[in-house]
Length: 196
Image 1 (spheres, helix red, strand yellow):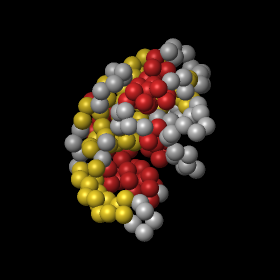
Image 2 (tube, one colour):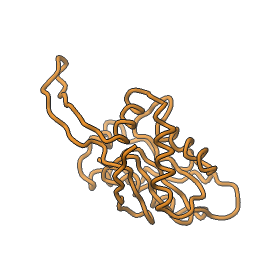
Image 3 (tube, one colour):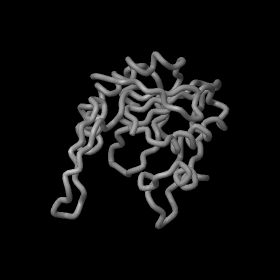
Image 4 (cartoon, helix red, strand yellow):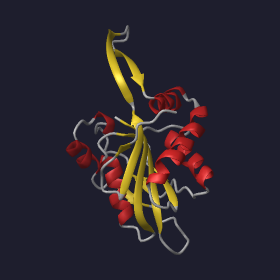
């Protein structure tokens, strides 16, 4: 899988993404239902992620997790636990969680998929993905991220925040700030499959 690593900036200690999601996009016009149509060219990780999220191609999990292990983890410090980012869309099976489980198996690292609690948005408020500025997203996330103190072992560990698509970093920053309040967490690293 061809990657083009990018450092992602935020309140975490270090973070990287594998590749830009969409390399080019050509507007094709409006379809019969009034939706804009585009011909998109995606990077290899971007296409794999697209197939996983929107075509339910679960065969993409293992290659993506392997790529994160081989390419991004060597750039970070020792990881003690993996925390998948909370999903923005309700699905029966969450792609980011599945990626975290696979990465956990590949690296023999525990995954804490219930450590982060994201309260639902107030009724009638727009979805986070429909907000365009970092300020709007920060305001929409204010007070909605908390910690479920579910780590029972004594000690503290370096955490890897794992996300699929990195955009403004607002949610990852909010999660990072919540994690910094938890005495079980030491360093916080971030990894994403693609960036917008």
